[in-house]
Length: 124
Image (cartoon, rainbow, N blue to C red; front, side):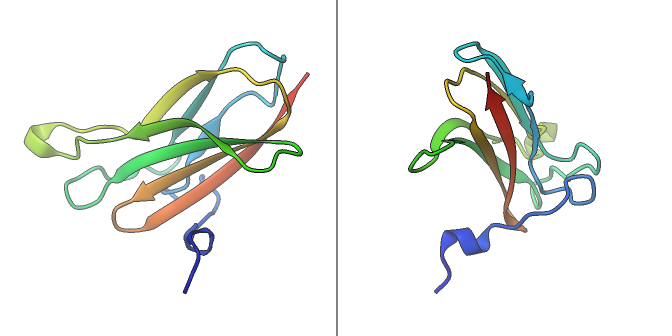
């Protein structure tokens, strides 16, 4: 039996349309609010149809030395072409951190499964 972690796929978001792209600064000031944006299809567009779509993103932060990551954002995309409505898969969260660590983003495509990406962030 596979664990969930073994099902997570990754790649270079510039060549793979399912990989979540994390738009966040490399350095932030402790306790200061900043924005994180997560999207897919920045370099290669992802279809958004009834048959093939990104259903959600989850974003986690794992502080250096921390025991486990904490969820900092969850984005659900419900409109996939019904009556001509489309949700472009992107979400923005405003957060503040006290410690350096790693931001992890996971996206779910209804056909191609789970995809992950991460970015380190330094808190000064």
